[in-house]
Length: 67
Image (cartoon, rainbow, N blue to C red):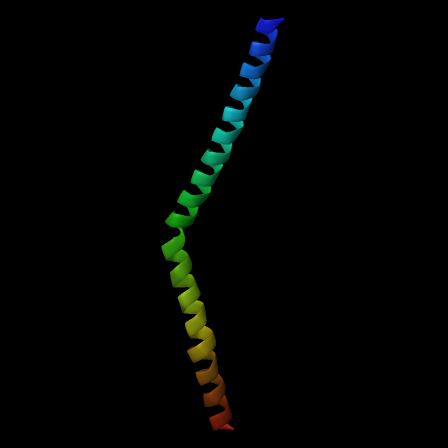
């Protein structure tokens, strides 16, 4: 009976280690994906801000001035 308890504890330990390693690998994949797309996201956000802050108001200002 003692060997069975040790085997059950060992199985629980192995499954716990496996589960934790899967969580760590998912986190690593997410971090590496964010890091690789960081520059593109920054540029897209900056260009969007420029359009909303500068381009659209200048177009509207020009149209109002033409009336």
